[in-house]
Image (cartoon, rainbow, N blue to C red; front, side, top):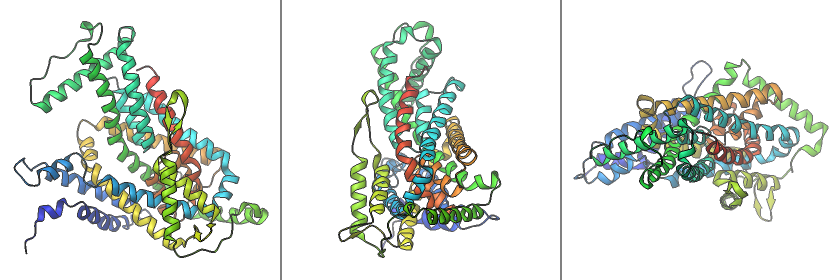
Length: 472
């Protein structure tokens, strides 16, 4: 029997399960009272993804592993289908668990959740646009992509790419009337694109365009700028996303220590207040429906309907089309069905332990996959040219988290048990929700996440479009 070590290492399931096994062990290591928990799989995934990509770069065209190596170099180590499925199952399980108490949370903090859903992405947008003014040589489209990445919004990414295409076309037509600053940024982007493409094709780098010699852009120059604008959004998102996930998870874990409050004490206060509120007003509690261990038909139906809802395109006039996305749709549908509880033979109230274990396992798959696919980009960004984008994404993520915390904690007086979920919902981050649930040891954050995430997703789309309409 022969054993092909390279084929074994290049198998996506091998690297995925290794990251999950080692990551969960790493996450259980306690440093005083702190541990990374489920987020350990993300960190281990980053390291394994980096070294696997470095290894893949050693294969030449003559190798039978060349095609797979090239796929790895592009960041396609774990397939998108595995990531989407694992995240969808995590969200459906989380929504069904949280649905039992959603009526209480919405009645008590509904308006506050709406405010957080708008405020968090707004702060992120303002911070991102501010960085386009601070860093003159940085593509503003990369920063927009970084905004969508730092707040982990795929809907924001789609809107940013579409609006980047439209606004870049308008700028090429209006080039003669633009400010000197805007013209300079456009020319710099074209020069960067020409230099990169020449290096890739291994041909002589063309002479750089000089602003003083340009009155209008040629068709070729305009096409290069438009292509670079769309690509810039993608680059910013690719670098910003893992840093957004990473620092949101770190923030959720460190905020209690930084602002000096005890998580266990917060939970105790929350549940005591909740118990008293439910005694005073029995209408605040959801339906009391007997649970079943597991209803796979009901669970699968919730996932199917959520996926369907998430793909419905809603026309918003001049803003174009908007959808909740697979994750937003799944969260909304699972909360609705879980609140209803039972439809005929289908029971959406399932055992907390079974749903909880399944949800945690699939989140572990997703976080490990993120780390593996983005590992090289993240570490290379820190060590190389993407450092500025990485730095911006970290700051945008931190500023957004802190802003949401200050508003929710000091203005609205929301207990951290719910506020942690509201902040992750405001940042549209399912991995962040997983970290909040893991850190608090309760499913309550999912209630506030489901209350803020859909509106925050819409706000991300709107703010991404608005940023591109502002002066360069």
